[in-house]
Length: 114
Image (cartoon, rainbow, N blue to C red):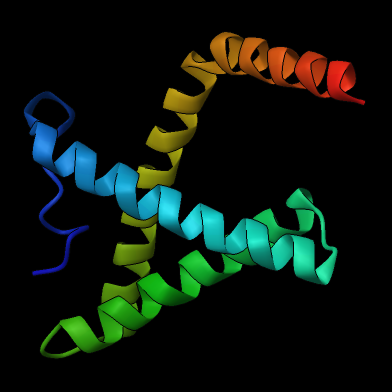
C-alpha cells in the first residue's frame, strides 16, 4: 500500500504522519528551489510542471499498483485525485490570510536588507 492510500482521514492524522509529510515536503521544496535558481525559471512555470508530474505519477502508481489496470479504473483514480487536490486547495484558501501576512512580512524584511 502506498503512502497516499494509507493517508488517514483529516480527523485521524497522527503527529508522526504530519511530521513525516512535512519533512518530505520541505526536502522536495528545497530541491525544487535550488533547481529553479539554477535554471532561472519562475514559480508559476514550476507549478505547472508539478501539476503535470503529479498527474503522471498518479497514473503510473495506478498502472503498476493494481492487479488489472483498466481505462475505467484509471479514470476513477484520476477522479479521486481531483477530489484530493480540491481538498488541498480548500485548505489553502482557508489559510490565505495567514499566508499573505507571512509573505508581506518576508518581503518587508527583504526590502530592509536591500
